[in-house]
Image 1: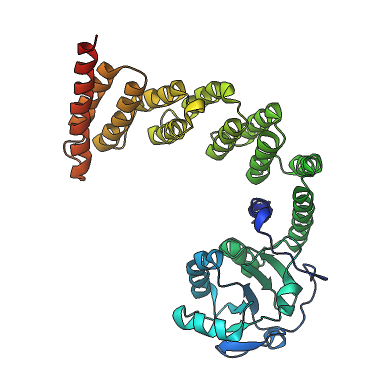
Image 2: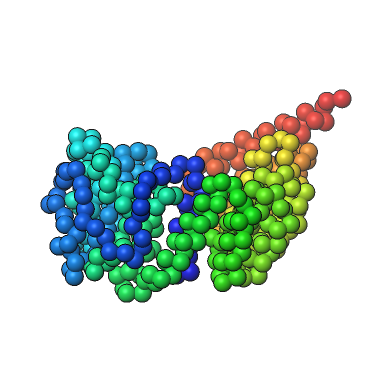
Length: 379
């Protein structure tokens, strides 16, 4: 997780579902206290003192809620990958022993699990802006190294286990994260911008910071000029970066600055003209806009460039892209051109491994032909 602020970005995106913990919180880098839990429900009870000098310990804080259920498969995979030999995993559920016991019978977990409905241990580890589920990593000396969303364990654990983990840098990022989230919570966006700008001075190529600033300026502060300048600066540092394009285009749409989009789609075509699937994805997004924001000229520009790409993976890919292009031609009032391209699409998809693709292509040829005939017959 070198030079990464993913922990902050993920939390900032979820400010409206923050679970605030009362009282003092354990500082990163501090020695952890012994676990104070209601009951162990599976596996042998664990004392952190017994782990010193032997193994790292990972604590999972989770609730029986949808967010936790969604992350369980990944938690189990991570535990199976790193557990036992290198790490001691522990699950702690802020719920009653009865509820936890019932849950783990339906969802067995490959590590000891305890109930903590008194919440003392949970509140010890949770910072004001943290959420459940939460993971924490403790080193062999009993110090708290890291905490954050369980999804990021796969990134942070290899660094910790290899001895390459930057504790000082993590503490700095954590302070930055908490300061930004506190400002976001009260909608103090100018302070957030100052904090982000200061970090960008140190890390100008940090993608998470760049996309955050684009969203902050374009969506929350209605400062479209700054959003575009940030994207421009980001693309100099990270050429052909799709996330920068995605974030800026989303911000421009949300800010109602659709008239600025054509220039960015021109750049997108210039950067990704050799990747037709990328252009089609953006074209679909344009066609999914509300009628008042629908800009078929943008979709046409993107699908036209995709259809004329220099190279395709195979006939099937070109056939599917031709089908998309034909649809846009039809939306633009050219059923004659749509029919012409749809016939090409049908031929290209004739040997598709998915027969439905060919059948759909044939149906579209019939449809465009009917529309063209009817348009000439109507007076």
